[in-house]
Length: 231
Image (tube, rainbow, N blue to C red; front, side, top):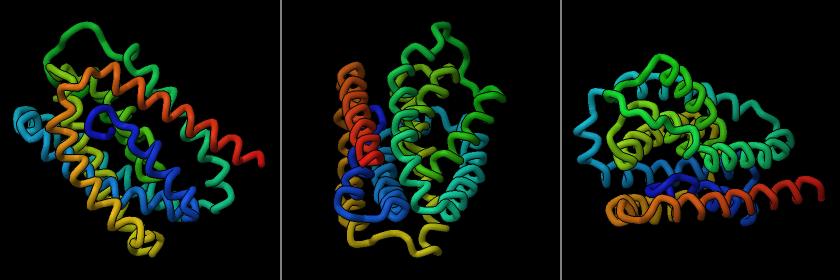
């Protein structure tokens, strides 16, 4: 899912919660596993990354700083507050993903990042370091304004930025010892395989099919967590 359109955390994060992992630990564990998966996805889009490497430096730089801020904010958030935030964060990510086709520009421009896009990427990186579900979806919406020639090119840069954000957030999570490695290691192994082969194979999947699937899963998980919050 992350290779094709994003939204993999709509499945993996709730799965950890339902398995009994505390919310903040589940978020950090999910981050660790998907970081490895995103490495596989980024490698699967190697051709597009080499073609557009001139665009990478500024968005990578702000992603590093923003992710570190977001991860540190998570570590000081009380568990009870974070539990109440989860359904709202999932709702936000699902709505952005569903609306993203209408946010994309119609006119073609030369590939570049405007100043506002770099600023938004900084905010997205803070969100990614803090929670991360739907992060890739927001990045795709922003990258659509960069004049990249194809969805695959946008997805390639999105995957590389996801590697950066999740990798940087991993450092304070490891130091704080909140990652549940019993789940993180097997999840990381299968995420690496899924990320690489998904990127190679699902580049041919119609995007409307992938998007519909992600919106359906995100909506279902949002409802589930709103119900759990009021039980």
